[in-house]
Length: 240
Image (cartoon, rainbow, N blue to C red; front, side, top):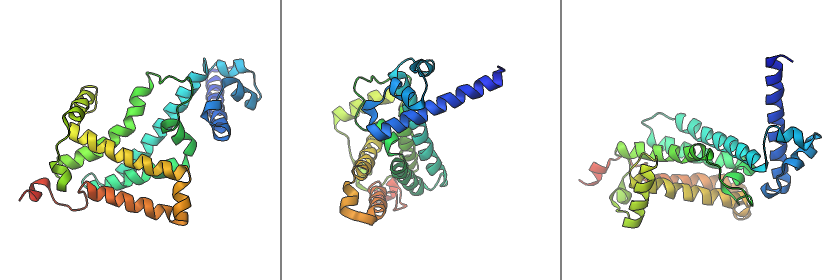
């Protein structure tokens, strides 16, 4: 067998394993995922799957890397759809992409931020890829702040010392922005995750029926105004 054909077969097999694993997660939940179950669904021996993934945790890690990468790419694409100087537009597009990606990929979102899989330990290689989506959000807010677009009361708040100290530790671990920016990014993420989780659990639909998207858009606009991004004024203008 020539090298090109062998590589095509390898890529095809990896793709089929991943698709089958996601199908199993969709139908039975992430906690039910097993290498033998995937092999049985594919109609191959467990050894065939173990050749590519040494155990269930290796398969879970691969799925997490795929999901984190796709999620981050969606955020980046949305952010880059607006001009760098359009800080409000970049922020809103990114938030909308967050919700849309999760709504279109509920099993993947649940694996990223939902109930942990029993017995699975977070793999070290997940660190950078898992951090990427938060760094994208942090970057959008950090760039807006550097341009003087974070305005109003938020521009004047002082973090409690314990929080400030923890954020400084995170900064030393690779998060490039000041504690204030990290806090804003974490607050925005918390709000978007809350909205998204309520939707995925069908609570928002129960309340709002077909008007869920209007609710989401309105809340994103509120977040934008909370940051002061809709005013177009600078911090210095606020202080005059």
